Image (cartoon, rainbow, N blue to C red; front, side, top):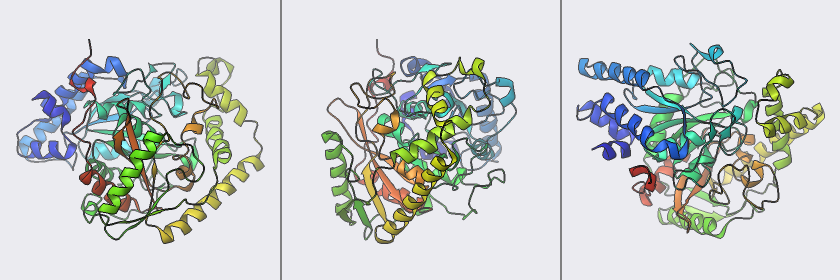
Length: 472
């Protein structure tokens, strides 16, 4: 029964809790045991506190017994990326520079919403230091590996959350994304991840990466993603960038399919070199959308690579994150983070404003593009997972991570919703993700299309070999 529990979605667990076939304590125990059994291979979790988790699970179980269920996630285990404040656990962000006590007894916007709905936090997941790159390793916790092949990277910066979902250590996980950090590990780990429209999910404390930074769900199915969005979108006055609440029921909006939608399929945005196996898998996904009744048109959105502008904005955010840290603290940090931050600190105000101008122009171009096309379909990444413990693949022409994530960061600059859904595997058995991008605040349509695709071409019954237990 344990493996059956680990493979259940949050929607299935809710049903089992409601009819008393399973208890929150039973489920939390199974997932804590799974972490103990397999996470030594992946290092997805940086904090596990069995006693606190089980106490919260027992409280949930009592609510079910007494018929006073708390919200839509009561008893559901959630893995929390270690950048979100949790009152009972420290939030270190993978850094020796954070005072653990300074983060206690504080709750972030997303964790507050989850708590209102009775979630059971299963632990904190590993992140690169301050969430600064597209792979996951940090000076405090070490390297996080891929669940399908621990010799490969999990991606990042929400790599620990990607691992947690793929290996059944939690059905739901929280991630953040300022350049692809939800979608990258979702693609590499073979799960679903949504970067919502900027402002759709309240996020507090505000990120040093400014308007690039989004918080969102990472799950095994698009349906679970929609369920989690219903919770994460609840109002929180502390996020002054959050847009007015629109009361959308993302679960209810999932039905309807894609028939009649006009989908732009861009295999390379017009300028990206894509691995042939990735290109083939995403091309097949485009054909599935056509078979489902969408009008699929091969067309590029018509912008050139905004890498330089993104670099100014993103690494400017990194410089902002460590601006108050002196030489002593910088000496115990990831040296590459310090290097990019110190370089960005030398940018002029006009450099930064020029990058903002490019972001504005990109927003306008994509707003016009979506007047004609409902959705844009691309690969999530141009490659599959590479050797773990590296920022870039071996023999890569650049030393920095954004150069291999060209499909993700443009849509942090525009603030549009981007969903990564598994669409196949390469010849090494590593997952491939497709990305669906919608107009700003059309998150419901992105999820609806992703759900229609996942229903038509499900890969949800295929788990990593590690899922069933540690390799000898």
